[in-house]
Image 1 (cartoon, rainbow, N blue to C red):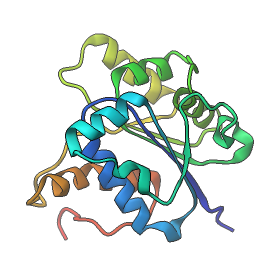
Image 2: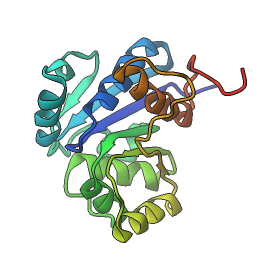
Image 3: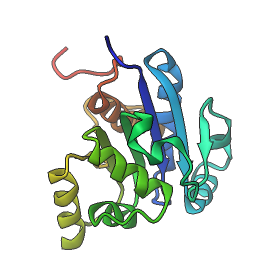
Image 4: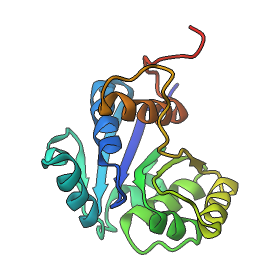
Length: 188
């Protein structure tokens, strides 16, 4: 018997709000594949979303919303059995705190829980270029069982809009999470 997916989407203040928007739109369309969807956003993420997308649509998804300092959220414990965490976009500061085990807010605590429970943590990192600290932090998270999925779009599907381009990353994250999606596939 398959346990229904319980998904956390964490949105940090890195540039790339379009990735989070497209991912949330796609998760909404895939609501038959999850039992619970929870969203945690930093204040910087809300400001960046407003700057980049010009709206506050992040408030209007069918999900449970949690404040970044709410350690009473169910996914702050492994007993809640959340099995997928998607951090999009993932700032280098968030990556660094996850890599070093610093659980100073709900995003980093949830990532720590997902890793310790051997569940799926997928980080859509958004920075360029990388310095050696970034690279070592990516290595540490990878060795701990997380998946680094750079917010690097692909072009072979001939995306026509910025959202189409962002969808190439969102689709990759959903594939990595194990959800069944319809997406461009190479060679088909």
